[in-house]
Image (cartoon, rainbow, N blue to C red):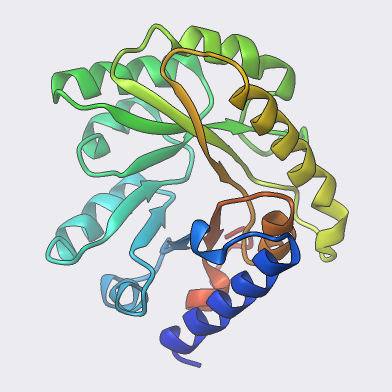
Length: 233
């Protein structure tokens, strides 16, 4: 099937999942994960209505940013971000989804200040406790957000997680439910520089469960662009 056909199917599935949980599907943002996808195919997704593109690698994001600069793309950095590469994307991204250390936040704040920007970020949590994944623990989030109050050029917009991969997405429903509970709890707190607006969770294999549990950003790669050399998108 074409990318346009794939997008149409995804949007229909999102609508059905949102309806199950009594939500408006228009409140859910789809980020097309364009990792390893060339600029022309990424552009097809944009022309099909998915204007938010997510990249895992800085080099790819910068390259495609230039190639698609005449489109209305909103770029998102969704992969692990090294401190020494922040400077290359700080003025190119709509949001950085993978903040999981104070040293990274400090660098983002410094680079944003240099450009006179307010950088929107999500805090990445490792709810599944997987050693192979980045993210802070759920027990650390409150102290972490307190420390984030020191960074005047950062705005925390919510939380992100990557659930453990499972053939049966029901097996990870608990991860999404726990994330929503933490999200709701923090929403009732008064942290400076923090606005709990976005809960980014759910990918090709489990996005419907994530939506049912409260996700309002999902990150879809394989179901839009087809299978590639890595699983988790």
